[in-house]
Length: 545
Image (cartoon, rainbow, N blue to C red; front, side, top):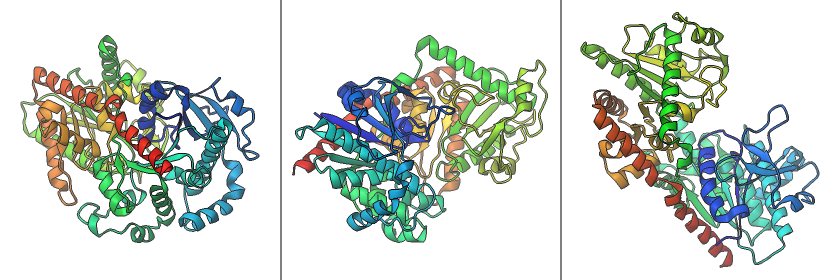
């Protein structure tokens, strides 16, 4: 059993991507075990005008420490709780005051661990300064505890915290370190640059590819942290193979899970689903001037704006093929509304759409395929692809496609409902990813009882195949085969899955929805936390050795 567990991430109390979902849902299970001896550390990037929506400053057992932290001048902390299930202790730390020490820190990390910060750009400096500040917080708290017998684990997530792990490794040798990569920086870059990852994996050398793709700094930091950590983990067997090849160390697999607390139950789920469907069909009607019936099939994809990696290209091409297939069969009358819930460079909600939604007689709007104004409509990948595929959302179209380029946090100006609330209203969700280390979005949709499409290149998809087999009618999850050369086959597999759901009888559909829920419950933190226990114990054993 641990006496003290730190977990550091850029996404503590700061929702950016999937890591937020991992940590915020894992928190309840960890807090139940470790109580206030669990401490999350995140960046204090907030202000009075822009407060964190999930951090609540308040009394904690760290109050005495907070009065005498001994941190460098200008490095400030706020201590409170992360307002997620479990409400664990959270420390938010500023890091701007550490920039004057940047070169000194980078030189030390080069000399000790071979971290090449010379080629740094983008978010590298900011990430490293935060990680360094987080490490100083850990060092300060451990020294304040002043008990050499304490069993302490410091867990760092993603390359963005690697510099912190290396500092702890250097100056707190008694603290066991765990490093988790949720996706290797170089693997993501290979895919993002359109290169084939899987067929050529045995021939890729991480250091060489980092030089070719100008990723030397992030890659060298991630690799150094992976090798220095007492326990190195990743989220799926798919990514474990990637780590072994590109980072040259085999990690433990600690798969991601989901906290069922986020899913409303019983009558609350029914009312949430009804409200979500009403709002989504209202938006579709206000854009197109149509009235969509209650039995309209509503589907969606979501995630980061990575067309290839997240399979958004496959999704849109599948919708184009689905439209053609449905329009060839005149006996089919049920409409399909398909959303792309992918945040982009959004400027503002469309005022004409908001006004039309409030009208008793909404009329068809100009550009009826998008809900928010973009800064870059001519270069936005989703918007331009929708238009290139000829989705005009005319009354006769069987498939209506709507781009929602905004974060769905409950106050986007159009839906004004959260992503989870809208998720409850869908009939199916599609995530045909090419690069997806785990796949939180399909796991979330399964938890909400949605028939879900994913791929065997997603860690979650492979986990479904390994544990439930390839029968989507039982698991509720259709796992599409994807590789470097079967794009067209993957598109058609998604289309066939959607048509199967489109024509499915209600009784069978309910069975499939129940299967999705059962599958998601098997991937709960209650079942998966054992993998983290293994990593913590391995790390502690390495420190003792």
